[in-house]
Length: 348
Image 1 (cartoon, rainbow, N blue to C red):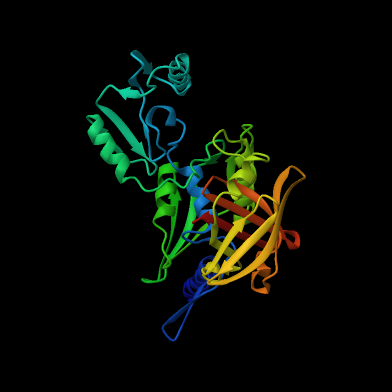
Image 2: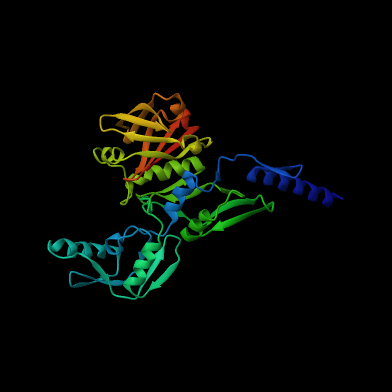
């Protein structure tokens, strides 16, 4: 009899833990998901940042393959302006750059000595036997959004992730042992899968120091604040950003405040003028706005204001997280960190 009572108590404790960890309850065959601040959703800003941290680095060797779709596994031999260069370590990329810079009247084309092995962002590999095959692979690559690996910080494995499949009502905890496992797990997320990292986890920063992370918010802040330390990223001061934002027109490709509100801005087009004015077009109606940039406590920011009251949620001072000539990522934090918003612009 005492054993039966212990079994009942154990069952009740397990059930309560399940509800707490996965935020799901069943009522009349309808599953309602309770928002957990540590859940990771497909396509979210944190999911994208984790993918960039855990992906196979593909940008570092662009001097030889001219693409961030994949990297070329070392060692590899190339011919530049008639000079054969064997690349065995990442530092040897400078030899290629030196050969390109040496003459001003040559073609500066990097030719591989085949076969070569390439590795994609998801860590899969492929043997390439000639230049025609390589060109076909590059043509099939998806468009490069300009936001590649964040390789100056390291997630220390193993880490555990609680998952709940709402379609099959199956709960599980998986252990991630490597970047490849984490990258491909994030890529496999769907709306039917609830996933939450089991904190605390340890992350090594660009100075080689281990940092303990206890929540999604802390992890996202840590990654964003580390981007400036990476060789492949970082916010540059004016006029680089001004040149980017004042070239062409833009649309809101992502807006998050509590939840995704991107669709509310589908009809808007924004044109940023070099004099600080913004021309806003919605269908055939034009309104105005203003923008300016400044530096605050080492953060590069942009202030946006609009005449159209429907754009009040976009009207704020935004930290510039990342930008290229075609995409701008902005973030705003207020309320002591309780209110976090994301605003992404993409060029038309």
